[in-house]
Image 1 (cartoon, protein in one colour):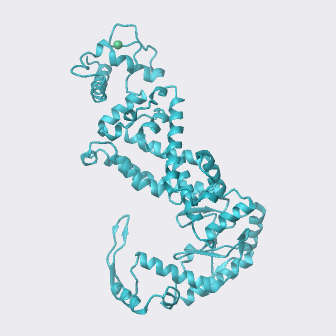
Image 2: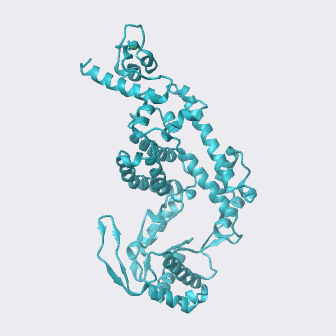
Image 3: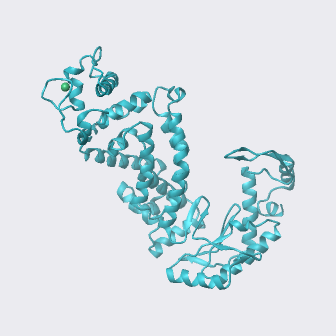
Amino acid sequence: MVTLKEKAEIDSKDYRMWFKLNEDTNIRVRTSVGESEPRLIKNSLGQGSFGAALASSLNIGCAIKDTFGETSSTHIGTLPLNAIVMQDDIAKLNDNLGQAREGCNKINNTLMRKQLAVNHDKCKYLIVGPRKFRKDTLAELERQPMRLGGVVIKHAGSEKYLGDWVNELGCKESIDDTIKERIGKQTSKANDIITLADAPMMGSDGSSRTAIRLFEAQVIPALLFNCESWIGITETQINELQGFQDKFIRKLMHLPVSTPKAILHWDCGMEMMKWRIAKRKLLFLRKIMKKENSNLCKRAILNEVILNIKGLGHECNALSTTLGLPDLRDKFDIITRGSIERAVREQGEISTRAEVEASRKVGDRASNDHKDREYLNYMTLPDSRIWMRVRARSIKGVKVNNKNSNNDLQCRFCDEDANESQEHLEVCKGGDYERRNLKMSRRKDLVIFWRRMTTKMTDWGRGIR
Ligand SMILES: [Zn+2]
């Protein structure tokens, strides 16, 4: 409380009112297996509320600052670093073991003074650096373990910090760990959305977009949280994320695994992972560059330039060049949010179009008419499922669509000397009955035709004619 009063200049009457408002709060904890029993808590400032987070940040942050003062234990170029605090999470950065041990003692004393308990299970250390350094350090720690308040703290190869996994082997491994965990966690959520998609309520706006919107709102933010920090993300890692999104669309649209990715990307209209991450990085850099010069993150980026480290600034510069934008590190004040978003959207469109045009199977689907690829906006999900199959040339049962399992591609519905392709079936004499009352130039009628034709083909296989 003294901290709040002195450092944040909060009036003691305000503090008292805040305390009174939260006195004797009944809390329940929501867990994956339901809600817990209510519990009365005495001294709290609103567990889980924003105010409480702010107060605890201020409390611990100021205490750590008072303890360590201006001393530094490591640096990026000319930027000295010591301990970084986020709410109740403290990370101490050190160049050697002596500094780490001293840091442990100081942190323990500080927390004791504040009557805060240390969660010893969550206290870990990572050793970052060349292999020999890590080996020697570990050997030294074997002889004399690291302690915090008398309790030995353990070594961890990879540890979760503020939602991201930090692996001591480096950036690539950290991103690997983070992506793997996130995809694992989000898979069940994505599957729930797919199950939900068939509920009549989900199609009440007459479009097929509801499930995709839900995916964008619930899954994507959790998947890409803090992806601005994924420096040096590899092609493989981006593909892994893209694969997750593709799989969602494929399952939602009931499409086979063999569906060309190009048509999936072109028709679903969802942003590609590569560009999602690029956009977030650029917007983040712009935001940081607009901050005052004392901002730690800004200083780290400027030091990267001085030291010629390939960090966020370097990556964004490469992205800006691709997008035809000026370097954000100099021109951050003249580039708007909107212009970054627009540039990314246009570039994404260009690359997806190129992908479709390069496809052997669906190369002709890259028309300039927006209506051709925006059918998810005006067709219901069952219709969209058929239409996407038509577009992908993967209507079930059509001979040409699975060349491998059919030796004879001759149309089975007429006597003409023609291969049984989707294009032929749309005009095939054997489909006259399926074309009754339909205008085959209308998208809506084509969907009806293909629904009838699919039934015909399935029945044919079972011997019903
Ligand atoms: Zn035919």
